[in-house]
Image 1 (tube, helix red, strand yellow):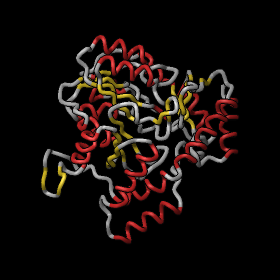
Image 2: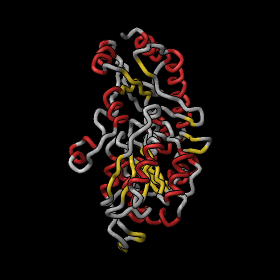
Image 3: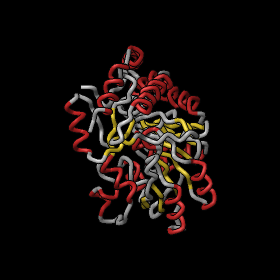
Image 4: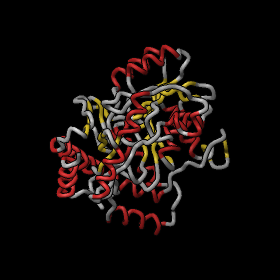
Length: 358
């Protein structure tokens, strides 16, 4: 079976973890600080605060920028549920806005309509889905015009860029994830980046049980610290990220050029942004038939996401509405292997198999 996802871990990660184990300093310490500093440098960001996961990064980011109970936050219905859950964690209200079916990201036109319908909204959470940046030029202008706090969920897009600017640098703060399925991993882990010193200070206190100094608790915080073990893995992976992304793009471009089956709709690739292909996601009319075909040929696949967030049980009673573009995608999308562990003959085999589907 060709796996749909496969983390690439090597000797560098092993040696980095062994160094931490031998030091006896397993909790947050030197490696975490170094990871924060090097991630800042890589992403051209001013401040970074490491967290225990991408979800905790989203939660801390929300609180750090001042999202409070009752605030309305615009967000996509087509993402992993953590994008919306983090809004609920603060007591705020997710307002779901439909997507552009060509990019799978928030539709600017739908967002503009939602802003008129909810003039009291507080923020926009943009998700750069599958590694493709959203249309940030218009969204930044709208946020400025409507006095909305702009936040970014970059969980699937580390290294991606819009018009030469890396994601995570367009809003007040951004959250990244280093889960094993992401473009780089720390095992589990996340990062909040911001250019606002007040947000950085608040985030740093929140992840550390609300304390700036030991046993001096200023607010009710959380145990969201990243460990030295995870940071050590992250540091080794960060040094490989550009190469990982280069191979992902190379594999994706082979699919773009080679796959020519009219039954399979390939993803859109706007020329003004750098896609890092956390997923290579196609659309098909009969997903059950297509995935059965892939399974019979030992080709792994993923379905992201079979239900939109407002259709999930915790949301459906309080978030009535229609999001036709997102709903249609949730019924038709399939992600095929694009990860950097793939051999070229495997990429060729997958493309040829898809061309023979029908």
